Image (cartoon, rainbow, N blue to C red):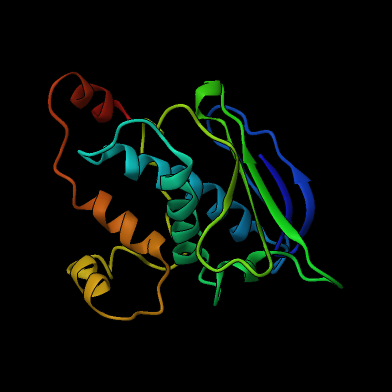
Amino acid sequence: MIIKNLTVFAEAELTFSAGLNVIVGENGCGKSHLLKSAYSLIAASAEEGRKLSASVPTKTILQKVYAYKLVNILRPETLGRLARRKQGRERCELALSFENNALDTDLNFATTSKSEVVIGSLSKDWQPKAPVFLPIRELLTLYPGFVSIYENHYLEFDETYRDACLLLGAPALKGPREKKAASL
């Protein structure tokens, strides 16, 4: 993952390992922004790929979908507010690389961007699995009825809460995946 000019990050390059990765830092250093930006791009692709109308990823679709998800997860006033502020205009750049190169993507947007990103490198496939982001607050006490309330009212929760509740409400797996899930 490569980040340039995202909120508190001037520039960062991260390599994640298989399994569990631990990100540690002081309050306000950008841990949540880092995780939520990666989550936003992966989740947006996975959600679009699950739609019945999905064919292959296109710039036309993803430039709006990525922007929408970033705004709903990170909750800035506008997309451009996520770009690091300093004298003059800056562009925020985000790039994700995967073992499967067909999923690689990179995008950028300016401080003046409202609702679209510029796709630099388009992924050739949709993300095959939905990511899971477990929000910090006690989610299980909020879960019953949360999705319908979130969908119909303005709440002070970002979209990771909605996404996690949708996954919590999914029915149990059947077939070969059932045994694998049970072993976890």
